Image 1 (cartoon, helix red, strand yellow):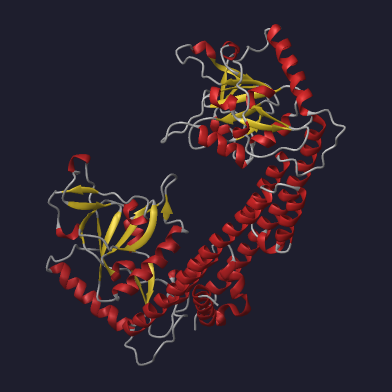
Image 2 (tube, rainbow, N blue to C red):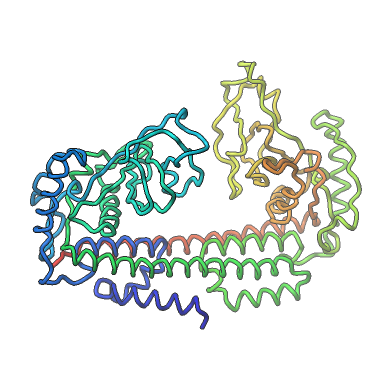
Length: 575
């Protein structure tokens, strides 16, 4: 057994043993549920802060005596001008007591636990490249690694040193322990100096738990950005154990949180290993060069089907493998009586000439012949390699001139890349143009295939179900005589999307011009086989969708059961 597996079993067993009185045989369900370890963390903290994680000791000095001494000390500090004056905490009423206190615990309010100093509102003129870092919420949450710095003189109360507790009370609601260089506190963050009532580490965990409760309550408000007002925050009632029990709670919580870390690390490793295994097996399946090799590769997958396809993303990989097999001629048998693709290409060319003569499409540039070196793999008999522009009429979108208001405020749909989804759907348009604007725009008819040709979503494609104009970030093709469904299938394979990306230019913003897009290769089977392939792909994709739906529903059910378990344990009365 490898070291990671031993570590994971040890972590799981230790957590299960610690929480067995609460969950019994339900621990595995909770630990493996979506975000299950996160729920375990919340539960551990909730149990700890209600006196249900470590035993009480009659020999501990009561928290009530500790609270009295701490309040006296705080009063002296305020009278001496050493700390900011705060209103005295009001007694906690019976209605505010959220659970029955363990012996020797006491109720008080957050204001009793320490001094909470808010940061400063720095102006851009205060920023610079030297001086102390200005600690912002995004620096605490991990959203930003870079700091604004300042040489501005500030009060000592807003200088942050390693080990200080910081509470973010706007947007990201959480408590943190600062571990960086000496810095200056930005607004919307409290720097916390613990009172004599609480151990510093215990206060950190207490604040984590309190903020979780406040974030889920009416105290957290704001339509765009949640925040907690200082007054209600400082007045929030909290339960405090004796000092000796605080130390025992901290030791136990930190031990169990380390075990949670180990479980999460093992879960990430399992996910990575599973993803690599799925990718390896399905890539091999998709790259099968013959029916015999396909059968052999499928047997490897079938032997472990339930293990491999136990999560929706694995089904996504299987679906992509199906598409790859479809365009390699390995999904349905060939029929030698089918009209070969070469004859279909001749008829497509004649259809193009007719449409050009009628003025319905423009004549495109001649396409260069396809060399053997360009062909990615060998095709079945009667198939042909073609360039994109060979199979239909292509165009690039455009946006009507913004200085002509008569082009806008109409009823004709106008879409951009945002309306093309990764799953191959066209969302309802958000913009509309007039009939004059339509006449000046590239227009796609139902069944035309649109592909994003620029930016981070390059390669997304879908067939439009309605007539629409589209902007310059999209290329389109209207297949002629060939099956549009088959062409769309070929364009959604990872091979084709990879060709789009590798052909694109621009490192920061990749872009593929229509000229280069026209030259990309597609495999073309006989028309009759195209229809057989499309029917088979649709059947298998429906099965994939059903399997994905069952897996997602199972995850939802498991998550709900885990929530119910945590809720039941969290609401159990204390002794």
